[in-house]
Amino acid sequence: MASGAARYDGHSQWYDQHFEPGHRPGEELAFLREALGAGHGQVCVDLACGTGLWAQPITEAGYRAAGFDISADQLRFARRRHAAVARADACSIPVRDASVPVVVGMFFHTDLEDFAAALRQVARCLRPGGRFIYAGVHPCFIGPFVNRTSEAAERRLQFLSGYGSGGWANRASGDGTGLGGRVGFHHKTLASFLGAIVSSGLNIRDVREFASSGIVLPRSIGLVAEQPEQP
Image 1 (tube, rainbow, N blue to C red):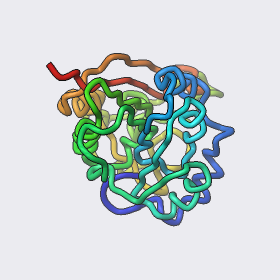
Image 2 (image 1 turned 45 degrees about the vertical axis):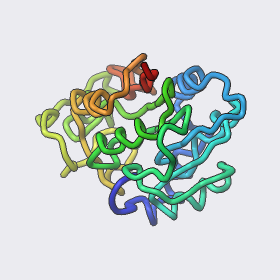
Image 3 (image 1 turned 90 degrees about the horizontal axis):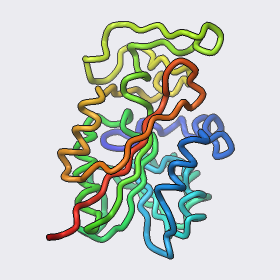
């Protein structure tokens, strides 16, 4: 969770059990490992780390991971997986300018209203040539405008109006996880999602789409963006 009230407080045990590391999506996990490469003891910021579900691949890649999240309840679990955690808003990261080689973010853009503000902070923290690795739900195919709960059985999706209307959802996110009904879901169009990264000054180097148990259309999107080298 990032920016604003810690809406995951009170839901962290359910969240950790429902999304525990053994159930991490395989495609996204493989993408993260590929994008991380070898850390060689460098620091990696796990932004909006939640309960630390992605800590293991970061540390296995050889990074010294630092997890940040606004929810103290989430950090109770993250401390079991990350060597260092701190309570912080993703829109105000307590890290020095141009000091971090890699920032990882996993599945948090629907948890905050101002994704662009968080990306500006990421860009501020990254050193020249540093990378931002992100994966999250696909803005085009997960949201209150599509019902994917019967996808496996019916091999089809039901689309409703509303894709072009960004903001906090007033109905279920349609992905069947139940998370949006607990903590809220801030829908962003693909243009606003990618625009937040571009407007931060980072250069998008790679974009992937992941089925993630989706049968008809992808459920997740991943990308790698870089801080430009100094001229």
